[in-house]
Length: 465
Ligand code: NAD
Image 1 (cartoon, rainbow, N blue to C red):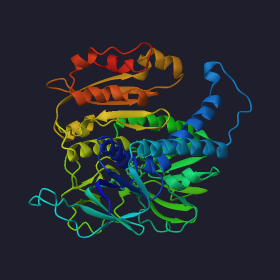
Image 2 (cartoon, rainbow, N blue to C red; image 1 turned 90 degrees about the vertical axis):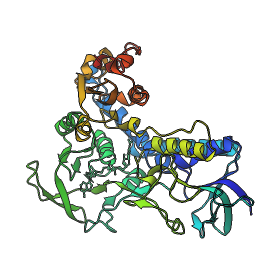
Image 3 (cartoon, rainbow, N blue to C red; image 1 turned 135 degrees about the horizontal axis):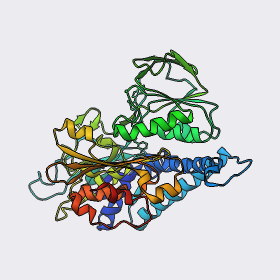
């Protein structure tokens, strides 16, 4: 039996980043993936949605160009062609990952892996002599490795709402991405990140959209002032958004709701399709033999180096339930492999400086804490804000749009604790704000950074006083 330094289960952003880093360090690595390399992000998440959203934005801009003095007649779109392009983009990127792992001499096994009992004692626990590790089975083969990294990701959560199971009208995000035809109308259950990105896609392609959100606001974890700007724009544009509204049951294409707000007196709604996007859950299949592995709310508990409570067993990405974002997964993988390789100095993840983007139109981008989070943590803060229209470039390219940039400073030492923006293309400059939060810059230090003119990024510079 071949013996590997590292066995990785799952080939998403966590798994393939770990494989690349450990292989480049000259270690023997084996990676198991039951579907396609790239995981949810590349195959049924970030990349396919952004490909489709870009197509929708082209159509939307073409049909809304009069405000820039441009008119186009008979603008049409072909949804099947958009889907085909999305598939090609995904295929090329998956092939790229495959080639990179191949170049790094990482062994990739296509199949579902299962950890076998018992887990041998760790290297440290053995009093010298023979090296021990973990056993993983896949197909009819068994593989041995010194370290195990669990990067099995997450899947769409199916809430216990009567009428969801085996209902052909129900879609999850994977179904929606696979459909070659647009729905005639859609109800989206869950106004979180997935829900609002799909609401954007369908709305821009002319599909009537209703969003049902259980909380008092959509995107409940984001800055409420920023979210309100999106909410006002989307409602004005004709997207029906029902907040504080619960789905009681679903019967075929009809959703029965109850609302605790005055936003609707409706008790039921009907649409062609119903997209359910109410969160994701960690994938834990194949790990049953890891006796004693510690979980918290259905996710694997890890320390600051992504080590689990079991010797030589690490976990990275959505399966840790920390922050379900691809860039968190890949950073966790870098840190975990660094720990495994005993790199000096050991790196840690700055969870306080993780940027996030919601690809609505306009985009929302943020990093660090909100005003509300600061208050709940009893951190005195100063809040500075400017409308995006303060930026010349924004004005030139976003006719009729508003937007906001909010900066949260520590009231005592003026370090940058958070930045929250709405307005295109804030996804492209939030990294500058992440840098400031990560490095603990004070407002005065951040103010010394020169931003190119004319760019919308200058709004960061202007918001700091
Ligand atoms: P989410 O947690 O972002 O949103 C789920 C929403 O559903 C919440 O607002 C919640 O209040 C609501 N909800 C829950 N139960 C409900 C019910 N019964 N009826 C009505 N509303 C209900 O989850 P998601 O949108 O499914 O996304 C899953 C994960 O994927 C998230 O962690 C997200 O960050 C990640 N993701 C990120 C991006 C991105 O970075 N752009 C894109 C897509 C997904």
